[in-house]
Length: 404
Image (cartoon, rainbow, N blue to C red):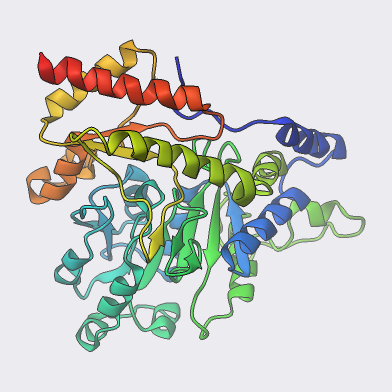
């Protein structure tokens, strides 16, 4: 079977991990710092903190901003559960906006969701396609919306408006209006999970891009301390002779990334823009070429004059079918030994959110996108023959279901 999303492990990755093992240092240390530097170079953001997951990263940044019990955070209904859980774990309430035609948050829905309790907005770059960030900032900077904002701490007072944090889990390498993903709003969070474009097995990165009122380099130091239990010295520094004494200055978290995991991502990101991302784009274009001729396929967004995706996954929607027919098409594709997926089941359809009175009927575009979508694999190891087999399997499966 053609797998859906195997990690990219080549000789360079293996050698980088072996280098870490042979060094005798495997927890947070020089490899993590090197990965932070590479992400900073890729995004154009000077201060990047790597941690153990994108979920941890989002929780850390919402905590830093003072989001807590009774606060509201606007998120899309069409996303993975981690976007909402990061909010809920802090005691805050996720407020959901419907999706648009491009799978991202429908910006036109945001303004009516803002209340005096709204502290943050977390747009999600679904499949690596950037959200409409300029439009989001236009909304939160409107005088009436800014007047609604009620700061509850010094950090919120300094920002003076709703905090915008991009869930950019999918979008490393994407571009919006000439700027790289990671630099598009106050803070962006990448995921380095095993299935992502760049992986550290598990991991994530925080890209700091706060306005000039904030010292992002000092904030990086503070967040790094918070990610290490609030300890004033990390293990690497303590291991150097005479540096054993430390203090705990804040009730922090234990969410640091280790050097072994960072080594995997470090080897990948060094060849990401030049090789890996270009191959993803090439596969994406082969899909577009095939499915554009079918008449029944709706192609996913990929590139226009303002945006270009990171080519993370291929969200193929089938025209004029039901959810049940979509499921049967997937079954047929699997019979042909091709693994596909569905991104995502909208949050209101999941038990934890249904029990909190979210109803999918209130998010019609999210459901429409979900009910017709089949996620096709996109990764550098796919050969042209693999891509041909995938496209033919999807087409044959569509015909088998629809004609029957």
